[in-house]
Length: 185
Image (cartoon, rainbow, N blue to C red; front, side, top):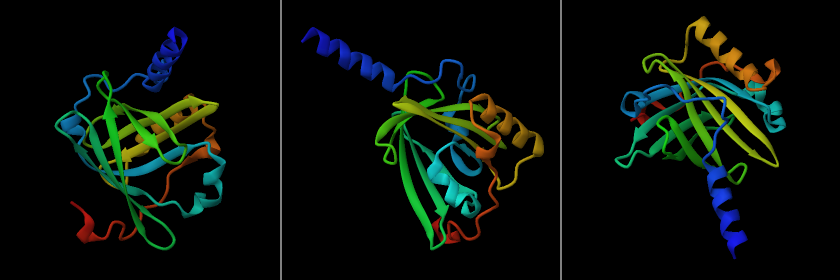
């Protein structure tokens, strides 16, 4: 019984751990981070993404803080057939700028860290989890669909520093009419 309790506690602690070498934005301010963002860069080493590389478009999302400190993220992704809407629920951790969420793709809880943002132009975000293998994704978000070149370079350098290959780094073109104008909040 004691071994089972220790195991459960260790699993719970691992569920909220993020890469020790990556710290969240200093003095992260969720209210300033809220609002519309475009995912203008993505670095992901999953073989599942390879067939779709050329079809990816910049996604749009809206971050909505909840009274308890959790976050709702509504994302619109352009597919070849339509514009799909997805809702993600990020749970706050005891560290400001770090969240967890349940990945339905991998059927596990993953860690989200807002690594760097200036709130008005860009944000670098790390999704990470180690479980049987390492799952790492770095995303670059912009308040508009175009960000400055130095920001793209910063994103690429950070992605490579996290072990992602240069070939896994994408800066997709803007999506057209996704979401449709009437869908935006």
